[in-house]
Image (cartoon, rainbow, N blue to C red; front, side):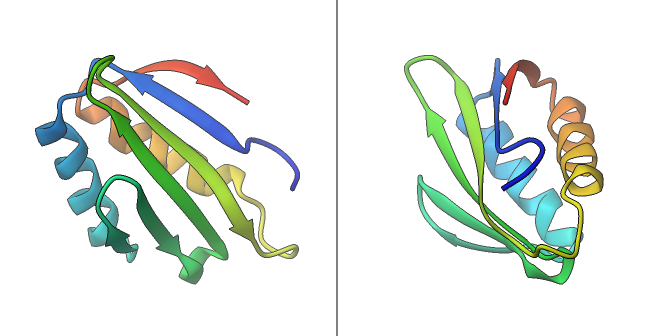
Length: 94
């Protein structure tokens, strides 16, 4: 995988994480599981895993599958915009 593969966001309650997942659905994501979640954005050529740490109020998102022909940067930008709209602060990006 190339580019960003993981990102962590702090200051997020479970309610905010659920809001983020609902917002991602409005952009075509298929969500399955329950902490961890599989965030299938195959329409954008990407699949992520999301995990919420309730003790630290941190939501981690990891890219687990991508199309070699579709860059992940635009989807990461969308994801960052959505998370920040729920007051999530970027903790780390790798």
